[in-house]
Image 1 (cartoon, helix red, strand yellow):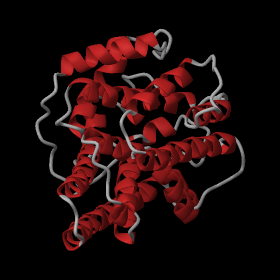
Image 2 (image 1 turned 90 degrees about the horizontal axis):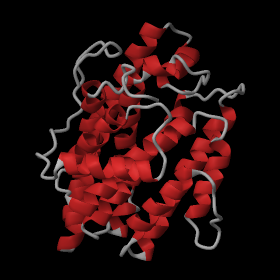
Image 3 (image 1 turned 180 degrees about the vertical axis):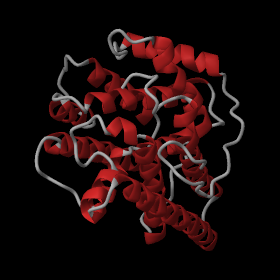
Length: 320
């Protein structure tokens, strides 16, 4: 991870570049533009080319072996979340979280006038197709955790609730929203992770450190954008300035140290889960699912650490 305006030194995140994507980027872009347009998700007075350009390439780096409808779904999921994340910064975020939660439970969903709710219903139906009930249960739980955390964030945005570092990191693991990407990875081969791995302390440690790395990278790259917000809990640097009673430069340096520590822990946890997988009697399909989870985590970290600067995500070009 190379230095940037907000990162003062080179950091080693211990992940290799993704494999070369085999999908067709222009086809993926065309589909995503048509899908976003059909659901009226494009922000007003926004250039579709600038807004949509970054989704296909980043998604293909996360899931380089995807083509066709699977790639289309992945790009649509990523683009939908960016739109949702933007809307959650507005006063309608709390009501929206409730509507989206209803979509996850058959019989509870009511017709919503919001385009973004209808778009999510389409995504959830496509994602669930042919997946077992066990997968739907944990995928539903992860989406609901995201909506609950977003609601909590929206409610506290203009209050005097100040998170400490431990609480912030726990909250950030949900709002970074890469747990749902790991769930999507299980749909690619319809090979779900074995429960005897999913529920182990080793896999939880791996997932937590993966999410910590992504959240910290995102916060450091997005620091200038978060400066424009009123929310005192929107960035780890703000939390550290408050908790450590230090200036911004010192808080950034502490965040960089924390990021390198969590990246080192992620590498160690990755080795531990691979070792555990070898000691457990996994079927070929279960081993394939574990390998895909690890590869997906590596790819997402790499994309998070490189894609924002490459696509000007944090320099004001795309709308937010």
